[in-house]
Image 1 (cartoon, rainbow, N blue to C red):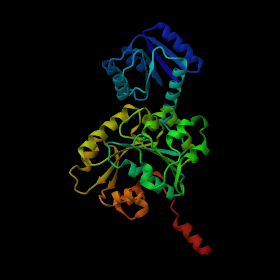
Image 2 (tube, rainbow, N blue to C red; image 1 turned 90 degrees about the vertical axis):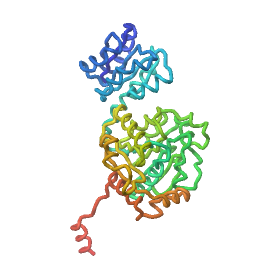
Image 3 (cartoon, rainbow, N blue to C red; image 1 turned 120 degrees about the vertical axis):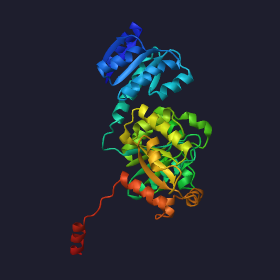
Image 4 (tube, rainbow, N blue to C red; image 1 turned 30 degrees about the horizontal axis):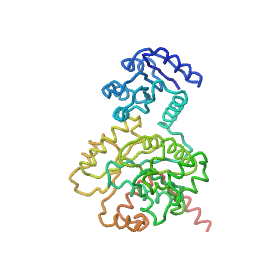
Amino acid sequence: MKIALISPNVQHLHDLQRGLEAQGHSVQSFEGGKTRMAPVAQESSPDLMLVDGMCCDPQELVLVEQLTSQHPEIVVLLMCARQTPEFLLQAMRVGVREVLPSPAPAEALEAAVARAAARKAARNPVSGGGQVLAFAPSKGGCGSTFIAANLACLLAAQQRHVLLIDLNLQFGDALSFVSDAKAPTTLADLAAGIDRLDASLLAASAVKVDAGFSLLAAPEDLTRAAEVKAEHVEAIVRLAAQHYDFVLIDLPVGLNALSIRALDRAQHIFAVLQPGLPYLRNASKLMQAFKSLGYPPSRVKAIVNRMEKGSDISLAEIRRLLGNADLHLVADAPRDVPLSINRGVPLVNLNKAHAVSRGLAELAQQLSPREEVSPSLLGRLFRRA
């Protein structure tokens, strides 16, 4: 990677440059503070900018936000001697990927740079692996889990190998949407044995819902949610993409280190909302966050759930508020969807002709186009008969 180092401490610059060059990176160092970020970005166009000497004052992040807005292709890491929760949250909001201590331990710095390199690669996902789809709810109750679970069923019905990961670690209930089974092993159990993670363990840890469709459940015990770390999520999603045609990730409300790690791996990111102002406001914030995190518009779409004809908020207004994002509409079904959820049976299995099922089938078709048999081939087959 091409890395730019900025620090007011000459010794820090020397130590950082020596360590990173030993790992094979191309490194330029610049003595100074945060005001040097913009000119360094213009002059050097680095893949990664590591800025040392940031204090814990959120006001200092104004210049960082300007940089990430103007140069979303540059991954920004900060080094901060004192880190407050407020500073860390604000740093994430302005597009900073990680905040390291100052000075940073060599192992922590090496791992952070490796993750930054992986994120750069993930922005242009390579072909050959399975598709990773992330579903981000704009607000509780928007239907994100229902959509992810039913879409997983539809993709599996196309003879695809599908895994749904419930990343709502504290209150995840995706399994109950598709089955009345209990999960003997959960995401927390898999994280606890991460050193033994392989394809066999991943498959054994997931509940087999149907032919081709498996689900990795969230832990039943709320206290076990803290056992799952961001690096566990990255390892699990990366392995799953190597062995499944589709990996669907049901995210919790809001962004955190774990969900961002999953979003980094996703080829398709869906913000899920309903046609109401509270949902639209939050969805708009999500879209801005995705932009700050460097996700290109081609990877980000919106699913408008429970869309009714004659809605108070028009499609044109929704598009405007969401920055003209691609929209996929799912019809409203105030009786049938709750019935499906309460029975633990996907609506797409209960009634394939339902308007909701048809809308989700269209999305499945876009994600996994079925090959159409040409009339000439049909003719040859019938002539042979």
